[in-house]
Image (cartoon, rainbow, N blue to C red; front, side):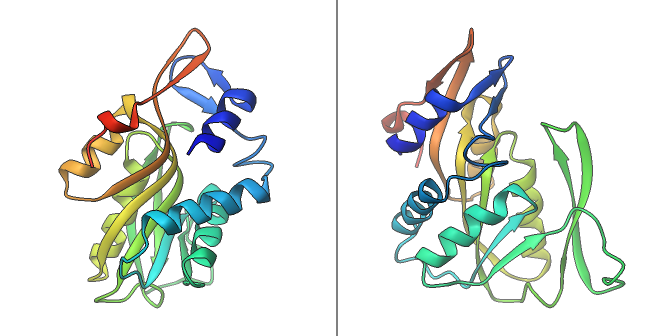
Length: 197
């Protein structure tokens, strides 16, 4: 998605060789117009798939999932919580997720009321690095007896192996802007034709 790549290059900041900061338009301050384009592109890529709902993780994935849901006909969006609220005393699915950026492990949860057996679920997130969040979300869907339709990520860091890991587990993966490497403060994107489908 060229408009997204252009924004990553013009506004993104590299931190070392593994982190890309895009908080000026995606996950701290949000460019709603760009988010609309992102949602439309995900809808185009997943057109024709049977999707019952979208699952994401708090908090950066929520806006992307909502915009995608809107373009897919107003699908319900469920987000996994990273802490168990006092109001959720029982009846939830849980999975451990390691955050590469924060260097922490969280137990993510979704109420059993919001993931049901037989549902076809699309997983959407802002980043795909090592694939930990996506695998954790897929586990929640499978615990509920549902099926993962695909995993969609706005930005992928292909060099960190998450996309390959998910594909090896049999998941379809769609990434809108896939970074091949970060070198000397410069971002290099993957050649889309060279990526597996």
